[in-house]
Image (cartoon, rainbow, N blue to C red):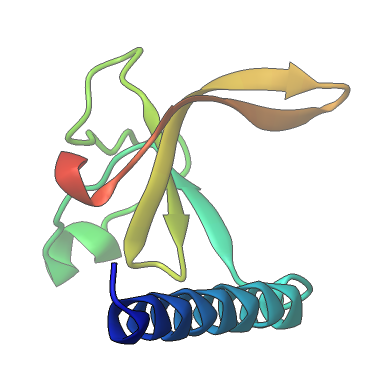
Length: 105
């Protein structure tokens, strides 16, 4: 390896190290930022007429079968994960069963 090639390799390594450090700092900055996370069991479309007919005891059919995974959604747009409903004391919780990646979308 020539001196020029060694110099290029050192510059490349230094650049990669700087970029990794920037990513680490950025992650630390965002670590305490709050975002809205929702759990969706399904959805449907209703007309305004159907909405005006809603009464206690009325059932709205959703687009998911019983037992289907619950979607964990970031800011009402991005599906982060899927899971199943569990009890956590007197409240609901969700046990994560799948982390959604870009490839899964």
